[in-house]
Amino acid sequence: MSKNRSRQYQDLVAKAINTPKLQDALHRFADAYVVARETAFTGRDFDLLRAEIAAIKDDVRDRLDHYLEQFKANAQAAGATVYLAQTAADANAYITNLAQKRGVKSVVKSKSMASEEIHLNRALEAAGVKALETDLGEWIIQLAGQKPSHMVMPAIHMFKEEVAELFSKETGRDEPADILHLVRVAREQLRQTHLDADMGISGANVAVAETGGIALVTNEGNARLATTLPKIHVALVGIEKLVPTLEDAHKVINVLPKNATGQLITCYITWISGA
Image (cartoon, rainbow, N blue to C red; front, top):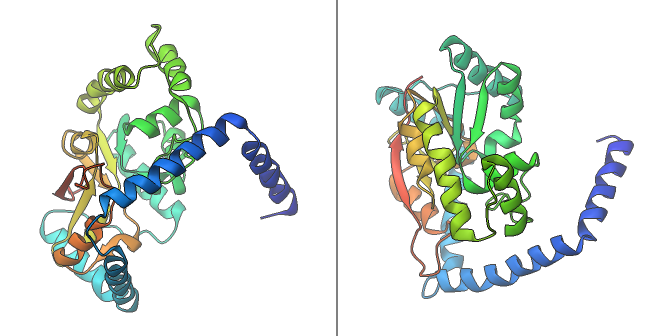
């Protein structure tokens, strides 16, 4: 990073930190998250789970080529096309070329934080393909023209009043700042887009070498729509998600975010659709 860019970044950070509304939003989250996490892991040995997952990750790192080939072979046997991208630009080029070759005009996305990291939406837009985020937080951020502020909760810095204003502009109605109402608005606005989309793009929480399958954990249900309704499903998955076995996948899923009762919000296993 150049000195000028570094200075600009530091200025942006300082401005954000000194924004009272942002301070309030992050303090509320930090306090609530600690309590929610303690509740979710009551009666469980979180340190043991973490150590087991660390051992799994070490094994994958040491035998990466083996597990990548195993995953690729099993996924292809199940009907998938597996492409191992070497760089972000390589991944973007593969997906945009696939979209153009198949005549894709619209894409719905879910569980796709990796695509934010490689700026996939920008590449799709340059290729004439409209990409729509369907995770609630990601859609809010997309409407606002912003970037995610958190890996799991991308719109954590925004208040419901700001979201209501964004949604009002989108619907042309005066949408009240009521969370349940805003969720219904998002559902109404996004449901048809899944039916109309030519391609669905998702990430994954784990990729299982012994089966060639991927697992997604979601609390909204839109991932099911994005991965099953469009004729083409692309799973953009970093190699850090790779685990050797289904048993290992279960351990990873056990430490993912849970609701207030300590239960997994939603989890399902899906085979990667072929491209």
